[in-house]
Image (cartoon, rainbow, N blue to C red; front, side, top):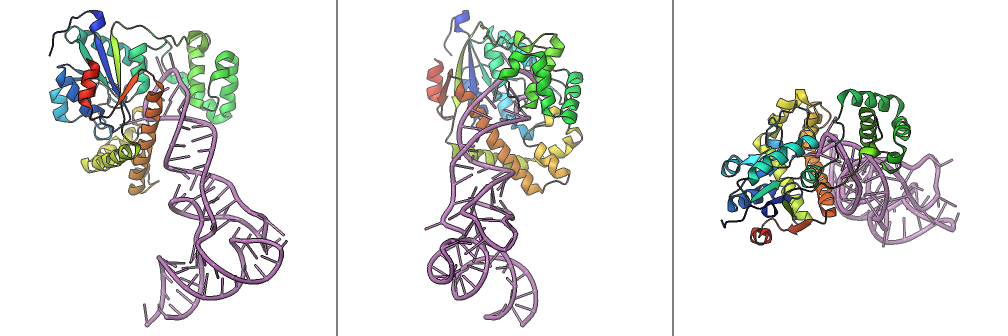
Length: 304
RNA sequence: ACGGGUGUAGCUCAACUGGUAGAGUGGCGGUCUCCAAAACCGUAGGCUGUGGGUUCGAUUCCUACCACCCGUG
C-alpha cells in the first residue's frame, strides 16, 4: 500500500458498523487485508470464548487471514463493561497505530463503539452487591420504590430518566450510592478528543433482505450445532453473558417452556428486533456514512 | 357422503341473555453513558368467510353457499 506519513492526523480508525448479519465481518476482513492492517472487534458477545456458534464468530479462515482483537478474550464468568473495553481497546489501537496508519474496528455494539470514539464518563463500575439489593427492592416494593429512591438521591437525573426502565433507575441509584454524590454531577457526556481520526462506515441492506439473511443465518447456526453449544452452556444460563439472543431462547426450550421450533422462531424474531435497535442507534449518529456491504470499492475510495 | 364443530388484526384468541370489536404476539417507530445481542417506551392494523333474511341495530339469531377440522362411513 501507499506510504502514509504517520502524523497524528493521519492515523485513522475506520469503524464498520451496522445491524447483525449485514456483512460486517466479511467486509472488515476484506478491507483489513487490502490495507494490510488489523481489526478491533466491538461486539459485546464475541468477547466470550465459550460462545461461538451463536455469536456468528468470524470463520477460522477469516481469523487466520486478518488479526482480530477482542474476540474470545474473556470467559463468560468474567465481569466486563464498556469502560474496561474503552481502556483496553485504546491501548491496542495505540499500539497498532505505531505500525499501521489505518486500523479497523468492526462490530454491532453501539455503546462500545461510542466509548472508543468519544469516551465515556468515569463512573463507578457496576457493583453486584448494590445491584442485588436494588433488585430485591424492585421485587418486594416495585418500581415506584426505585423511582422514589432516585428522586431522593438525584432529583435532577430523576427528571430525565425513563422512569419505567428499572435497569436505568438501578444503575443511576447504584452510581449515587457508590460515588456518594448524585449521578448527574458525574454525568458530563462530554466527548473526549482522540489522537486519531475516525471514519464511520454504516452498512445497510433493504429490510426484507436483511431479515432474510438473519433468518437464514439462524438456520445455519442450528445446523452448525447451536443446540449442542447452548445445551453445554445451560448450567451457566444465569450469567449475564448468556442473556443473549440465540441462547436464552434455547434455554427456555431446555426448561420445557417452549418447543424447539418455537425457540428457533423466537431467535429469529429477537435477532430482527436487535437489528432494528442497532439501526436506530447508528442512524442517529450523523458521523456515519452509509454503504451497501458490497460497495467495497466505494468504501475504499471514501477511506482515501 | 352423513353427523358435529370452527371461520374475528399477519398469527393465537376475546367480546354477558343481539347495542356496531379488544388482548397477547408479530409488524412499524423511538429511547439509550457501563450486565447494552441488555433494559425500556410509543404506535398502526379488522366492510368480524361470502350472499341473503329477522331487527331500530347482528361478530352475536335464522338460512344458503364456501373453506378448514373432528367423528362415522
